[in-house]
Amino acid sequence: MKINKLLVSLLAGVTLLGGVVQAAELSMVFGDTGNALAFLQEQLTRFKEKTGHNVTVVPMPSSTTDQFGQYRLWLAAGNTDIDVYTTDVIWAPQLADQFVDLTEAAKDVVADFFPSIIESQTASGKLVAIPSFTDAPALYYRKDLLEKYGKAVPKTWDELAATAKEIQDAERAAGNPDMQGFVFQGNAYEGLTCDALEWVKSSGGGQIVEPDGTISINNENAVAALERAKSWIGTIAPEGVLAYQEEESRGVWQLGNAVFMRNWPYAYSLGNSDDSAVKGKFDVTTLPIGKEGDTSAATLGGWNLAVSKYSDEQAAAIELVLFLSSAEEQKQRAIKQTNLPTRIAIYDDPEVAAAAPIIPLWKDVFLNAVPRPSAPTKVKYNEVSSLFWSAVHDTLSGNGTAAENLELLEGKLTELKGAGW
Image (tube, rainbow, N blue to C red; front, side):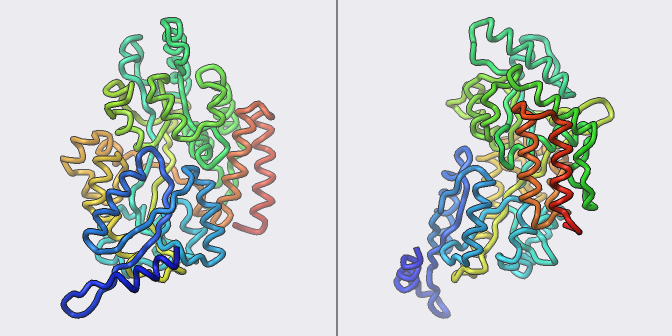
């Protein structure tokens, strides 16, 4: 890859007034979900037309856990082949030392972004990455089936379970043996941390580790939330959900075989595509709560663009980051991918509202979203999350009760914390 960059650097000079500007050969890593890679290729074509720079995409697995592991290996080795990294919102404190400080490069546009999202990508005063799109999950529901059976959109998790079971059983009796009540992300990976944090937080069980660093997960509300989720397995959710990530959940949903689904906004446009069995048959709402008095919790997600400090094409890489996070590119991403913009003004764009009605509705949802505890746990977050999703997966799988697993988890987190995070 580096030889190819050198050749392009030598051969691709473009004469302009004032001197010679050489087109760069860049590489960026990207994890594909849905048709996101195809859309990115469209963006990179526009970028090349504008700048002359060519970008090669290095595909990554859709699992964020697998991506993070590979990133750490490359960055620890000082890999010069990757110029731009797409990063999860939780990774800034852990990878800050490996990325270029973008504060100066973004000074003219940073005010256009939501301050909280910029803050999430700032570590020790350094802007680690530019936000590309943000995320907050929704409860997808089959409005046609709820109308058919005279059911209201559920407000609590118990209401969801009851409605899911009734409609699932009726649809199976009517001739669809594949119908499921509820699909979500139950595999043992970062996605389960997101789902389970929502179950716990929306039931008054805290945020695993609180903003002040206190380990809070071992409490009766968290236990009740996980036991409730465990009761879904094999009743309203298939046993196979324990291996589902986002795309497996969407696959079941988009075939018309689920009443409810928990997923991110990207699934909205795909669900309304011409080849979707649920086109025009569903809607979205905020995730349920445990009981009256609790508040809905949607895990704050989102993807950002960072420049490797080991890149030998940093100037061109910064151009790419600013282009992909620009207002026009974010608008196109919102319209075509239903990804939530990180620039405030796009939420009031009528073209965006017409193409993706979910986006204006989600402005307040994601601003009130619950963050994963990456800020208080800093470089130890990945281990914290792994311990948490393992305890949750054990519980869902029947390997110990929620009370037993959360007590063990508390002990492991206390040991990991040591004298401090």
